[in-house]
Length: 513
Image 1: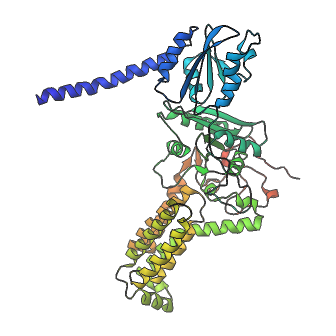
Image 2: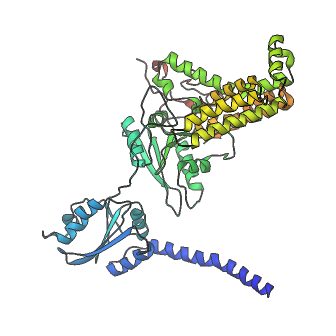
Image 3: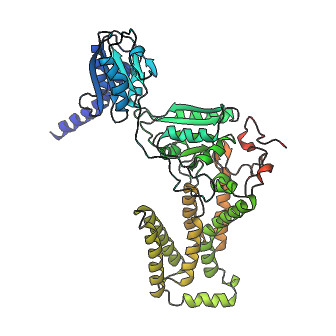
């Protein structure tokens, strides 16, 4: 009996995919066909495709066009369409107008976007918020651009805050995002191309670039990468980013993620390619280098001395965030001779009654700092900063008074933790925070030699990374001709060239005056 049940179960499991495959083939075959001139057959086809009447927000309205004395029906998704325009500009005139007419465009007051005959194309338009009109005896379907998707307005950037410069940020509506870029680049060479990247959800990616600047090989590489993966759904740019990366398990990001249109426009004018998606309040910048992760739009909005001062602080913060805790561990555990005697006595005095080794002490406080940081981000905004301040003060003071943590460790952890906040790119920020734990382990077991070995190994690893064929440390290594906007930037009048590693069609962005 048990063997028979097992065989039956295996048989069912084996036959189920065949049934699904047959069903998918039938759907594909239907969508490859053209609509019928008979309205009854079209009605039956689209009711089956959109599961009407079970599908609550898909509306199908049947009526008779008085002027033509022919049956017709409208099909649209009520949650994505402008119902007022449909009723006043399309359905109302078709039912009630008494003016003589022989064509649909002469009857409706709402403009016809286009006509289509393929069932698959019409289905995709309807799913995107377009209203479709089917008329008995007519081989064409009339499509009206009635899309009206609700969303938030254009607001300030929350993650990339700057003091001087534009405050606008992308939102979830890709039309608004493209408009924000076009507002900054008023050029007929700015191209916006679309490419479908998923089968079931039919998510569309928008490629934005300047055709007189972008390298054709780079553009082709990006398009082929977008076509290379097959997935049912890619609902957000953050997920698409993981598909596009050459090394998705890499600790360091190879694509710039930003929610600022001014930053995106600046990269486009250098020859980069921008990716946008509906429902994503951000964009992806391709290709990316290590230096792009640390540059901020504010660096250019500020005068050159001020912008360079901020950059120097940012790069200094990178090393402080990575090496403060490891150096403290290495010196106190392995290289005591490097510390002046007075400072050594002060450190020894603070650690006299602490029962844990230095590495356990540092790890405990690093984890506590990360917990407080994440808690402050996840809780509602009115109490988020309060949790961070109160949590740090109470935990730190209590730990010192209980002789669990020494005061100098609190200073070291606070310094490295605060320095990590200066790194503006979200992905790079995570990379530095994780790398800090690796450096702590290396310094805790082998001292300064372990931290140095890990740093050299990390440099070799970073040099090996590529972003769509571009070296991660370009244009420093391999060296290429560019504007030299790396550690320091020149005054605007001296930045005459675009990045050479992109191989743009026009290298010169500013002629000599």
